Image 1 (cartoon, one colour):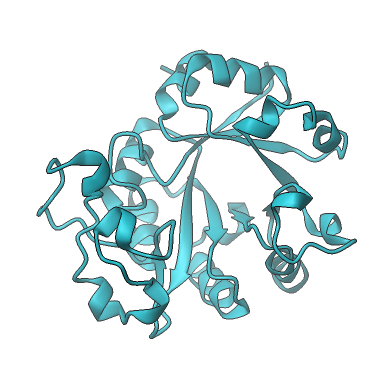
Image 2: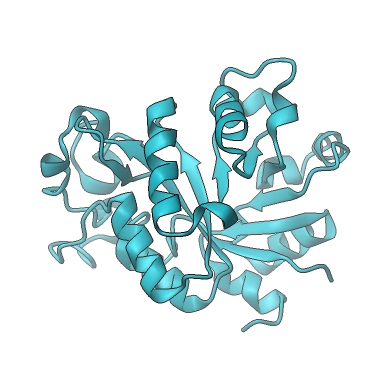
Amino acid sequence: MKNILVEGHRGYCAKYPENTLISYEASLELGVDAMEFDVWLTSDKVPVLMHDGNCRRTCGVDRHLRDMTYAEVCELDACYEAKFGDQFKGQGIGVPTLEQTLQLCAAKRPDIKLGVEIKEYTEENVDLTVALLKKYGFFDTCYFYAFNARIIKYIKTKYNGRTMGYPDFQMHEFVEDSYNYYDEIGINMRIMRSEILPIYAAKGMPMHMYCADNEADVRYAIEHGADLITANDPVPLMTVLGRI
């Protein structure tokens, strides 16, 4: 079996509120090889981590991060009540900054690889994110993800960052030469189990498959060429790999 990298999706989001410090810490303690998170900017240009941008789903507040100051973001309760009920409510679980997360990783697992999803599709977001990754020593080993081909090209041409894009039909601003700026390609479970998978496998790039959360999906992903597997719950993946 090839050496499959295990990536925790938004930390350990099957068990903890996604994209929070407790989710990241649990993922690190579980022993994953990599950890994925999503970067947006507040209105005063602080990189913070949340998947949607709009705070409604995970924080219960119908506002977008880009319209909020960092001080306002600090008032949010990121307990993801819609998924976890009262389990994490009122425990001071906030929306973390990128810097807080990198400080956690540097203290707990300086060897961790980071999957950095650029969600605010601006060069400024990339620049601020790269500066922090370099400050804490994670830039050289991280992967940059984006569903935007212009951002992938910017990361590759300005910083020579390691990039992972997605199949062309999933990408914003995809143009003829966009694949030239990919180092790797991200394949979701629906595509992985479809007849179009060979089209993307034939491109010869390492494949990141997401999200394999049970042993059947894990084995299918491995059999079909996965190099890195992202999981909301990494335990089935790590079990199949003999690491638990």
